[in-house]
Length: 278
Image (cartoon, rainbow, N blue to C red):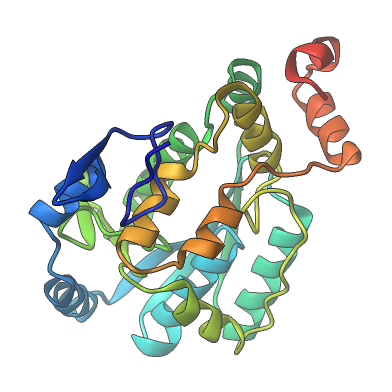
């Protein structure tokens, strides 16, 4: 099986071509042809952050949004509010982390609670990734919250930019800033060491969501690989994550029985046990 020489894609997850004697996936070919200017992206991010006087930080209580919160407050000195969207399956440890970090940094925390059961139920039953729909719904709720509060900027903990830019303009002139654009995992972990962040033992690559592990396993059982392949491959391609760690992140997760039982119960899938192979 051919494997991309630049990222972790193989023939299961992407089209591979031999270019100058090296196997490269379609995404890496595009990356090499239209290679982002990292210095330009970083400079644009710094210039933009210099204009922000007030912001909402999309705060999940996970490691990446914790780093984004810290930088917004301590590096840029921006007036901010941490807003957590609790979709009904946030880990207790993540909520505890959120409260502890916000108290430590003296940042106001707002937790907005919604029910995303429809997204998560569909993901498990159809062996799909819940992440795109979950993220889109969450960003829309944050956008509306920003409009209500009169706040123009929403800062998130994404490490990959929007193509060649670290921001995007949403409806209503709300600007989403990916503050960790092009920041390596090593750099993020060094910041976390300064903070009272406690790493939860959750299945999957997550530090905040209970649904990720079971959804990853279900997808893996049907398709033979992780639905996180594309994102993790991009991190390797950009030099933000080494290949060994990347492969661990896309491996099939082991899910404690009590976690699966609780998720099945909350989603009302008790009669569907055989279907989702709990």
